[in-house]
Length: 152
Image (cartoon, rainbow, N blue to C red; front, top):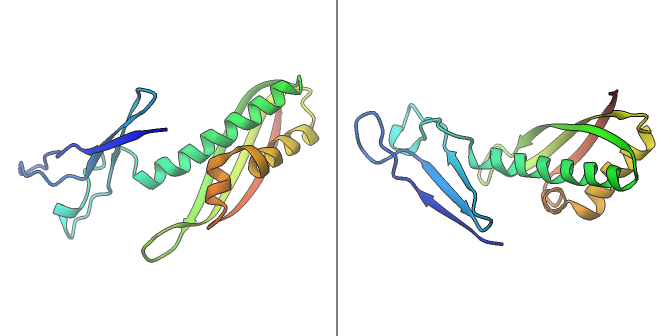
């Protein structure tokens, strides 16, 4: 897997090249824009709020990875799953490096006659065996999950 991340050298309102915007180009040929938070105290160090923060993309990637697993596991089990949403909330360390210390993932699975035990098993399998992102983040963060089922 490869990825190239380049500073775009974005311009600030005064025309200087100090915005903290970066463009990631993935090995699969896709692009992702990332930006830092504005810093009123030091505008030259802050972003322009043009895109997600890099750590937000890490959190989103973990959510995408585990949702993918859950849907695939349920489909392979021949469950009539029709939707899956994961809402992630997190806490980070207060000082650098501001790693994730807690991540909670709340799944909402929509389908017809999908058993709660099947969803619980799919989430557990994702977090224990398949989802590289959550397994990696679990080395430093306490990851908890919950879920609800909605009939379609």
